[in-house]
Length: 335
Image (tube, rainbow, N blue to C red):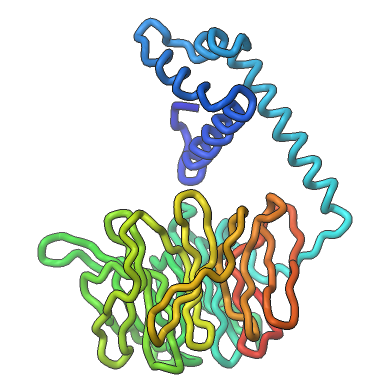
């Protein structure tokens, strides 16, 4: 597993595979197995990982790998057997390409924007498309977009993308507007390092995520007079991957240490409140009525979960995982 011979997600799979195997080793032999293995393999005469693992555990590395593989197959079989009689999933409306992610409904609910890598080779080469419900047409809006987009109104999209190098050759993620009717793009920021913008209709403002030196924070600006100001104060490596607007609050997911939870940020006094904090991971919050819908992995598989004053519970039950929900303004359509 220490040699890369793949492209794109193939290399990422090597990391994931190695991490899972390390978890298996610690579960079976205890936490000391990892530092013992690292110390032993650093010896210039111990060039074989098979021999190192045999010396430490008494079991040949190839046998350990087979045992791990069988344990995974048993785990996945048990999951599948447990939920296979009650699969709940939606209708597939976009399947071209390997990646179709981060949908966002227009205010009138007649279309939605999303990212896709169709026509591109890499998992990470995504562009913004718009799907119209009335005629089921899909239109390319802008290329090279990697994070969530937002709507200012039914014809104006706002997104972040890499700008052209400045005079010193530096490249930043800046915020842009795109007028669908006029087919025109307007740049709003310069050298900003901002991603995942979200429009706040009640205040005519725009918020976005800033990532600097391994830490995320949320910034906000009037949309008619761009001047982003930081409104959170994380400095410890905390990472924010998605935000949404809910009444007078922003809801966002936050990775703190090794868990991901949902928090609420009051847009009046900028106080942060834990909204949904559990032993399992929860991410991708989206407004739904007077609550949120998010993606939880309580069972070991991420599925969409609704939590409001009137109702709570899972709305999907899939084998692979359900992520990145978006709810139309009337609450009838979910993506």
